[in-house]
Length: 76
Image (cartoon, rainbow, N blue to C red; front, side):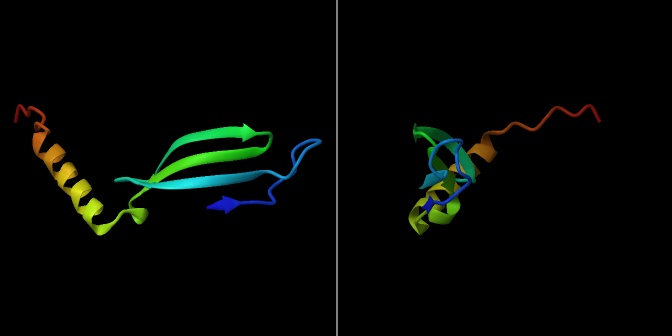
């Protein structure tokens, strides 16, 4: 996804960003870079771009992690 015609850089072009979306269990910005002056690139994870198969795999991983969490010790 490309966003163009942003605010102009001082003495330069209008800002723009190219966002690469990857499948992930949550929305998160993994990286942002400036390959050229006032041109940015970002990698973002989101469940929105996952295939149904990948979404099920992530759900199973989450369930396994939750099972492994030990409950806190309670003196009551």
